Structure formats: C-alpha cells, structure tokens
Image (cartoon, rainbow, N blue to C red; front, side, top):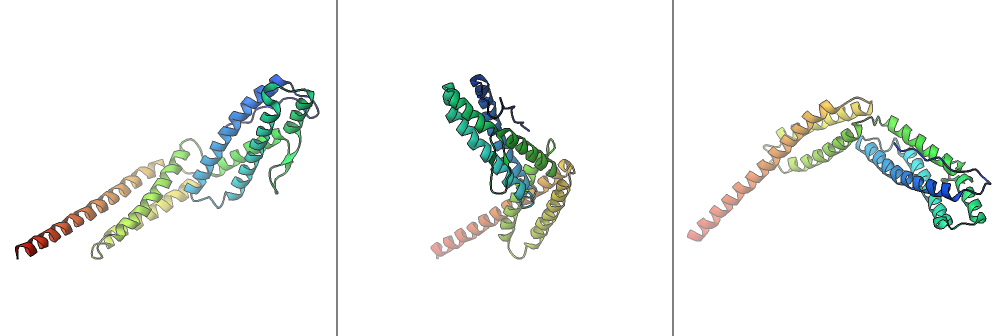
Length: 234
C-alpha cells in the first residue's frame, strides 16, 4: 500500500518552491497509485461478493481521493512550473494546509489529513477483505470461477432433456463448492488449496459439455446431409 508524502511548510507560510516541486512529484505518484489501489479493492470486494458491504467505505475513499486529486491539480496550476511570487507561494500554503471537505458527509480536512485519512481507509478495507499476499489473486480466481459457472449454466441448457440431469447436478455441486469457498475466503481462510481442484472440475465439465454439444451438431449435420442425399437420389 502506498503512503502519502510529507507536506512542506505550514498554513500561512509562503512555501519554498523547491520543496513544493518535490512534494508535487511525490503527490502525483501517490494519487496515481491510490486510484489503482482503490480500483483493485473495489474489484476484490465485488469478486468476494462483498461489494454492498464495503460500498459506504469505498464511496468515502473515492470521494477523498477525488478531493486530493482536485487539490493536486490546483497546486500544479498555481505552482506553474515554479514561476511563483510570494502571493502564489502563500496560495500554495492555503491549498495544502487549508481545510476542505471531500463530500457532503466527509469532514473538512487539510490536504495532508485527507491523504492520511485515505491511507487509513485503504488499510481498513484491506483488513476487512483479508487482502493478505496472494489474496488478490484468489479473489480474481473466484471471480473467474463465477463467470465460468454462468457459462456452464448456459451450456447445460443446451443439453437434450434426456441427458441434462447429470450435467446440471454437476454444475449445482460446483456452485455449492464455490459458495463454500467464497465464505471461507471472506472469513480470512487460505483457499488456495481448494481453488485448484474446483477450477479443474469446472474446466472438465465445461470441456465435456462443449465437446458433447459439438458432437451432437456433427451428428445432426450428418443426418441432414444423408436426408438431402436421399432426396436427391429419389
């Protein structure tokens, strides 16, 4: 997780241009990295089926990020590549240390405070989602399995009624296992050992269904071709 850079000076003090230049460079990196982190957290929450649960914190975190990003842009414009008089340097101090609200329900804070609040929120979200090393990858794999089970649902529907029960039961079993695995992941369990077998079984079922459907199409095409040939010969 990225951490906000230290801000120069204090409120009411004309900021040093060299310190501002360094701060803007570091803040630019923080703003970019934080947006990536927030997008990853949002994706992980949705993949784990916890999007609604974390929606409030995610909304606040995004609002704070937007507030910081907007103030960063104002700082860049005011700094104007270092071409600043004392008036602009004092204005920079207000932009950094003055209070501003990130949204209707957000507290009015300075730019450094907003950054620290963002750091705290991201840390809290990571803890709630149990995003320890490797968990991001697990969340992505769980999301992939959910998409695969939806494909399997569509594929099973293509099966003839006489043979549909078996594949449908297998799909339901995979779905049950995925629900159990997701719940374990939400409780912070390491589900890496369970993901592999589930992915293999889902892939095998999908392969069998695709192959079976293709063979039925081939058989149907051969029958149609034979009928057409017989009609021609008659």
